[in-house]
Image 1 (cartoon, rainbow, N blue to C red):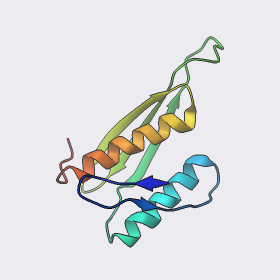
Image 2 (cartoon, rainbow, N blue to C red; image 1 turned 45 degrees about the vertical axis):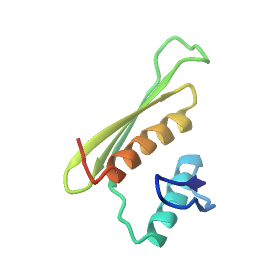
Image 3 (tube, rainbow, N blue to C red; image 1 turned 120 degrees about the horizontal axis):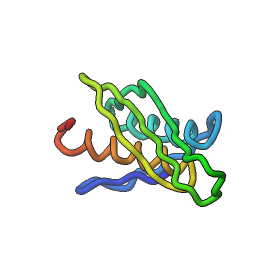
Image 4 (cartoon, rainbow, N blue to C red; image 1 turned 120 degrees about the vertical axis):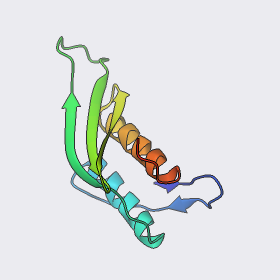
Length: 102
């Protein structure tokens, strides 16, 4: 995983986990630990796959986080893991934008 933000260097970490998203979150936690930053707690994780059996259907992932208060992020992608990662990137953008949780 590579992580960078405006004005900061590139951070890189590799990790394993119980599935792709767990490995992604483990790598993210390692980076945030090195930065001495706190990540929100994942409170709920919901995946919605539309009915109909189409293999190119968009999967929606809705993740509820808690960091002083609850907030939700949504990811949309044909790949379930990519949808979850997109929702997580939205969470990172929220907490890194001056700590403003909308």
